[in-house]
Length: 246
Image 1 (cartoon, helix red, strand yellow):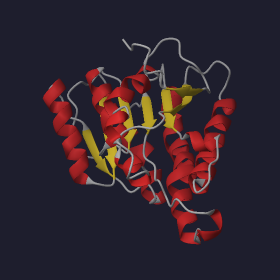
Image 2 (spheres, rainbow, N blue to C red):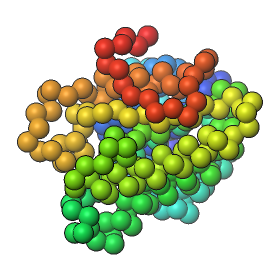
Image 3 (cartoon, rainbow, N blue to C red):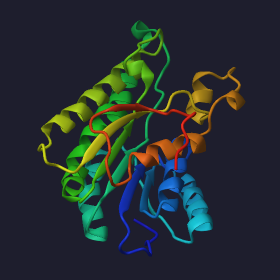
Image 4 (spheres, helix red, strand yellow):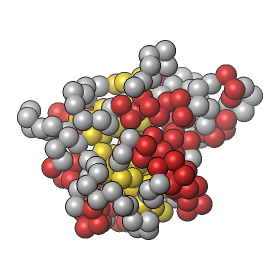
């Protein structure tokens, strides 16, 4: 990990997929809300760009952790590394994902499934396993997992996304039900809808991105779920862009 944070008493948040898009916007919003941010993604350059924005707007640095989430052994060390470096973890927002291959199911190859399963449900399970103990010890732990509407509304050619996101949702909802009733940890799914991101452009190259909300429009709705105080538990939350966010 690089880039020590200066706010030693502030809550600690981990954001995956923080090098671009919604993940980068969420990292910025969490930092502006006063959290110490640990940012992870595969690309060092994107993480440094996110850190530059955070320092520009808050005066504080994020901790940068280049990490390929398909590397299970390295991912398993994430929780112990955070415990050693920070002693706590208050929030995780799992934004990392993959579009995979948009294709008729019969045309998908085993390698397409293997990668999508690693980045989707298997990464979710490993994050829960390595980070769960820290989050469950936090006084107001929060976990938000981004999902996709195709998990509940399958559509032609989106079978890979639908299946892997549905599996991810099942894993998250099972974790919720395994928590003690008195646990302060709040865990939710967040479905952002169509957003002007690189993945959306890849999926629909003819779509006018200007007509879609930006990641910075969506981020406050995710950050709201990360705050202490009363929060839903085990819910499927969507962005209501007509509702102001304090």
